[in-house]
Amino acid sequence: MGEVTLEVIPAPGHTPGHSCFYFPRQQVLFLADVDLTPFGPWYGDAASDLAAFDATLNDLRAFPARTFLTAHEQGIFTESEFCTGLAAFHQVIAQREARLLEGLAASQSLDRLVRRRLIYGKVKQPQFVYDHMEGQMVAKHLDRLLQQGLIARTPAGFQRLP
Image (cartoon, rainbow, N blue to C red; front, side, top):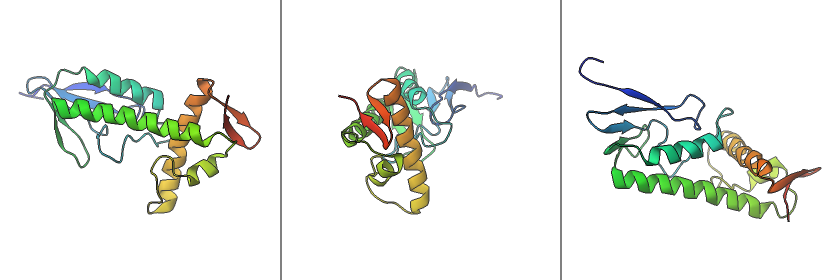
């Protein structure tokens, strides 16, 4: 792009084709929707992939930039703030999964899990939008826990294995 060099960095998870943009001369990485806000991490699209999102967070950790920009709210991060934000996103994912596993001591349907607000913690407006996103993200965790052999499908939904 003339005087500016831009590298496209694949960063799937948020969506399959999600990318970050690196400006090597400036040592700036535009994170796009890896926004590091308290709302995230967000993997609520039908095509989002929780494992890919986790892998992207790990891959970005060692990225050789000094300044990090996001597409939402937070704006500019220094290297240390960026590392702290990535660690926080990993922690949020782990906490969501732990709450889900706790809630699966007894068999639960996806609808019942959505009503428990395991992702966002409370009802937000418009409720039908947040219910949809909550359901999509809970389903991503359920799929991963099924693959890991930590939960099983039951006639009533899903339950943690002993």
